[in-house]
Image 1 (tube, helix red, strand yellow):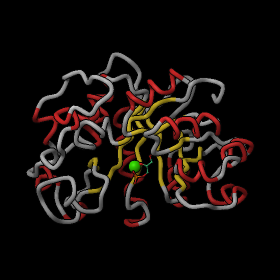
Image 2 (cartoon, helix red, strand yellow):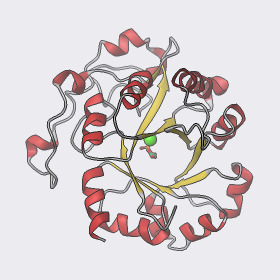
Image 3 (cartoon, helix red, strand yellow):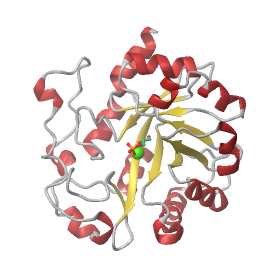
Image 4 (cartoon, protein in one colour):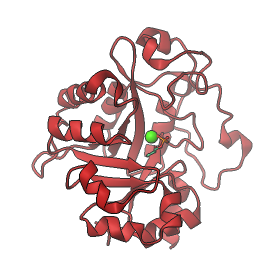
Length: 272
Ligand code: G3P
Ligand code: CA
């Protein structure tokens, strides 16, 4: 996989130009040619998986409160788009964005189910990298809910005969191990933001699980990528928004580049 061009994943959708985690951000990313979509999921009080990064709704909606204490209907009553000053209006984008989204796509809460159904209906393959948030709380409920949803779409197994477009990512080794036990063939990524001995990765997560380091960690440790890959693990690097960071990923042999600016990142990759 590393001899090929890395896959470009739209982090929270095309989140440089549309409100993160809205359908607008994902439709824009698909239109701009992203290979995959990154999406954080949280549980609502009534057990739905919603696409929200933060623990609270405060930063990305017009409401206040903790996501997991609110019900789906309460979250759906909020405006998830008006906090974002659209970059396009500011005229600071280097790649022209096609106008494929509506105002309602920009303001509505997105559920994981809706995102999956949009991807299922596309006429080209697009993958989804689902990051489970608050994974250690609720004793694995988030992973079980995700598995239930994957089963609804027939995406709970990843085999040559039946490939799944979804992979699961987490900063929690426990969550990754839980998911491996629940869905042994699903692709998994263990996210890493702090320095740790590479050998320790093998104690933390099973063989075959990819490693997702912060790009800054790779930049500070130029041999880290090679050492992770030598252990038979793919590299999924985040969050990569500048040509210098793309260079770091290529030098490290990354398979996957996760970017807030998928179009610009693809352009940079094509020029390198
Ligand atoms: O893709 C991994 C990256 O999203 C992890 O950081 O905080 O943006 O979820 P965060
Ligand atoms: Ca994330």
